[in-house]
Image (cartoon, rainbow, N blue to C red; front, side):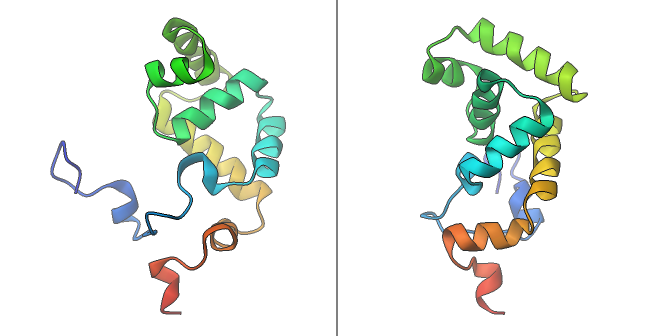
Length: 125
């Protein structure tokens, strides 16, 4: 349940479960897949690091602290990413990047399984 609204989280709606020790956020995808997505979307190194921060669930201040830059600079990068990728917000940004992962990765679920072992959803099959 979402602690703010009491409603289910997106992964719960989709029926996706994973163990707490499995990969999450940016680590769900290999570095090679990240590089290919960055190439396809024409992301700079800094833009890629910011997108990975979003995938890890970090807000602007945390991303800024992790990269050693100001929150204003992170915000500027977000504005440029939104224009570059034609997205309106961070949710659309993440969805756009996931679309590219689906194109460059033969099977998203196969990638997750290879990196983390079977999820609860796949353990029964």
